[in-house]
Length: 97
Image (cartoon, rainbow, N blue to C red; front, side, top):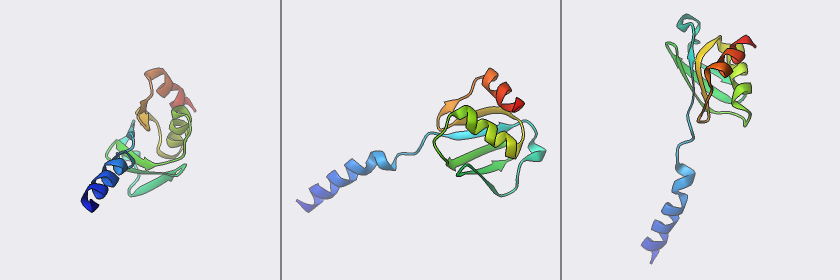
């Protein structure tokens, strides 16, 4: 009976352990990529070359998150916030400030 209860508890907890949607950006200039981690609105960003990924962060519109990242890391060529990818028009507006 204990084994059954343990299995049910693990099954019920599985969605809570699921990975959050991806947050990522591609920097326009890899030379400006930070070394180490950078915190932007509670999200921890790490970059390798021009590819940056983040974990955590506050709940906000993806366009606002993009503007905040651009202010710290520089212009981007792609941006996805918690699974929501920005269009080319949204990225252009983000880079414009």
